Image: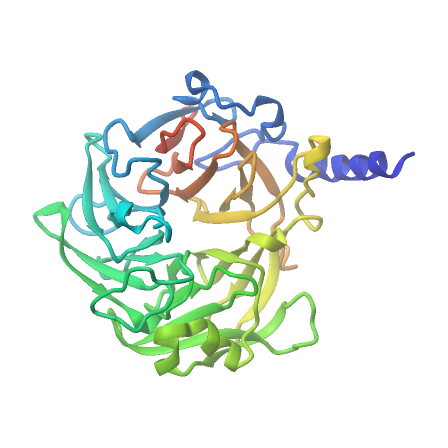
Length: 425
């Protein structure tokens, strides 16, 4: 057998055991789809306008908001990450989104600034909450335990400078308190440089109110911020994760959180982490906590890590191509796990993963019940037919039967937020 054919056969064998088989149970119960949408990739707007995803039988997909009801930019709006008002009045009704549009250094005059938008999930009305010239490539967004919105910039340089933090040279985290009478207005927005100046994407909290962020570069560090006072992000200590055994090429095992120089971290947390020997990974992108475990998508390494919270942290491979997920062979049309990007906590504790890949697939990882550190099963839920686009911002709100996901930089020029719903419930 020729080498290429042998590789394809091995990949196919692993692929068939990794995502084929019986129904995945729970509120989002489904039979895994047959494979990635290789044969269905298209740029045809008549196909992609309402049905861009290949999804399991019994599910429907519909547009929550696209550029026909809110068009912020001349080009694509680059809808990126989603969160809803998880607490307070009308909890779950309003979805907040970041837009990852970046300025061009060759045409700064055309840039109108980063934006946060909101969609009323009951009426479908979409509005601009806030837009500022000094915001660049807005990415991660999360609802805080104390009822504010945190969002961050994924950028390696500051072409426009925040007037409240002029020394920053990389992305920043912002905190927004919404007007209690109008969910589309901000009462205030404050920069939170204590959470580090890096190329941000994922943001997550633990049960004690500590904040976790990442540096989306390669190698990129994983950070933990411990506020001096619960709910007050204006002061505290930033730490970076460091594996105990520096000779471990896999960068897993027992670890510790190392305190950083806070003066440096506020303007360059990347260097602050490197100065203490923090462990770097290939483009860590998103974070998601389920119970006492933090999951981290490591995009360039085709894996999702788990980090135990409480006590001494331990890092393990939760999902990894070739371990418990298939290896993609794109040239041979073989479905596989590649470039995991955004994560979501499913309604029954499963981890949902969407790829920054073409085609962009959605995977569902079962919890680790047997105690070996790895997911007990990884299943293929969906695949994006929009050639060149990616799925982003997967998120579950208050409805356990509905998954929200964006289609970013669509080939049609119409970026959108979609909901995929289980109609078999």
